[in-house]
Length: 115
Image (cartoon, rainbow, N blue to C red; front, side, top):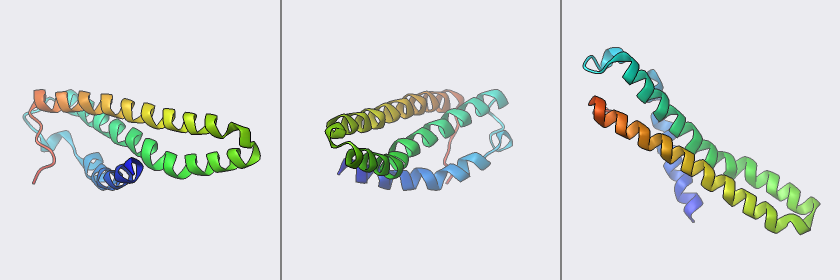
């Protein structure tokens, strides 16, 4: 169930990613250019890692685990454990980058998304 919720949240991130990628420092004149670039990089990295951890594992991971488990059934438990571990590590790395980006966003006074 959690995976389904995260896949749906991924749709929102995937929709916002191109908008974020198009942002330029000129749109935020009160923010130093280097700070803006660092924030944008962290945000994009957080989104990318989140999408790999959710969508990537859902598609590629499920297929790979299906093939491995059917080829070597005794590895089913190990494959499940590795799948969950990769998923959690991906979410953790994404959260760390997202937290850093949120801190920079607050410190620099970046108001995005612009309504």
